[in-house]
Length: 565
Image (cartoon, rainbow, N blue to C red; front, side, top):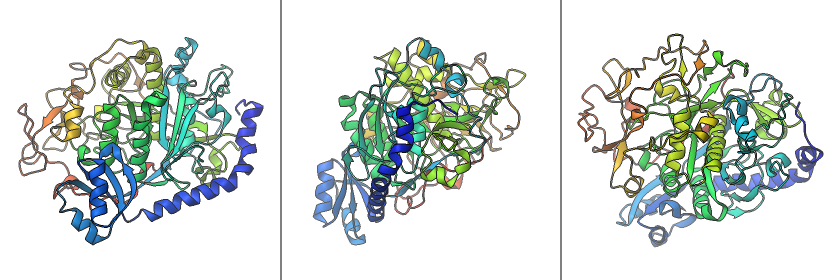
């Protein structure tokens, strides 16, 4: 189906036999590591050194140093854990819960593929020589297979700056027996040509430098500690490899406010350091308040998924994917900020990967596999962020987010009104050309101070509220009511002709003044009162200081398997 070089053929098939035994051994070791940390606890203190000392004082064993959040993961008995709770330097004890990658959706014939660079106009930038050459993109996922078109840029030069296995805590070659990380990487930086006669690259940013961080094993399983250790490594090596963009295509259930979640704490450190973090919204839609971690983090770019109805040349019938998670977050933020192509995405994944063997009918039996999900949509936006930075190397991550948001085109109906709520589509589907060549600045993360947020001095909420009838709306703005009445069966045009009320005022943040849910709801400093009867669902009544005890034992997924549409 796709043209491939002899080298690509060798990378796809010839390396399989030679690497199979090593891959199996590596994944067995990875899985054993995860199993051994099942009883572990994340211990956060005033510093990494204090966390190590506190664990040592009670006789515990440190398994992970998580300096990015001043924490360690440690194997502790119940008695040791109780003793740590009495230590004044210990700020937080969190169960080291399981996080599970899963590949979104398979479906449709492998021959019916979405040419996603065209859908977001990335090919126009490629024609101008904007291909991501000066930018390094990191992905934290299940690893990346050694495929030539992923390892080398369009000139044949090696693009991989380094690889890190957060499960085994070592740099160097690793495998992706699961297949999800390879699929995500392919969407961002594959150098193969699309088989449509156009000689266009089948990725968003084909010339980026690349970093692959493995935090999930051959079955797509991982832990909070391994994810955070991977994020810690990225922060430590940011300047060495010029890491400007980080793709996080996973989504764990929200178990606390965004600022209390250990993964979000690490992600905020990365944003503070200037990295553009792109996260998937999750595949738990279409209901409201289904955005997961780290997509519920107000600083990052959270991405939902749209589908082209298998007609990439006809934008009039495009739809929001019904599996795409919707906002608002429990703190009242509008999420996702944007949507991107995420339906029946065709990208690289080895035939021997776990996902492909589970769904062989969606592999072309050569190189490409068809999946859907917000994981894939996030990869598209990560590629767009790299193109923005390639053309605007000095731009801050806040302004990259602003450009991407300002570029978006919402879906509208025949009357020019929003076809989907702002809580479902955010500002709309991203446009790479407008994001790169636009002039918008200062329109994202307004009212947020990440330094005060990280230190715990201040936390923030957004403009979203719910009325007595259960309708979600934006406080202070009109025209953003969501009543769950939107259909996914009809196609809508994604247009740039929609006039947003007061610009993107719904992205602004407010100071959170009441850190718990009480009988009077949420009180904002600007006078907004979330009164009796306006409380969020009981599932968000986190008590006892939002303790994480027994709250992270459930698996979470990047994208659980959902139907194609």
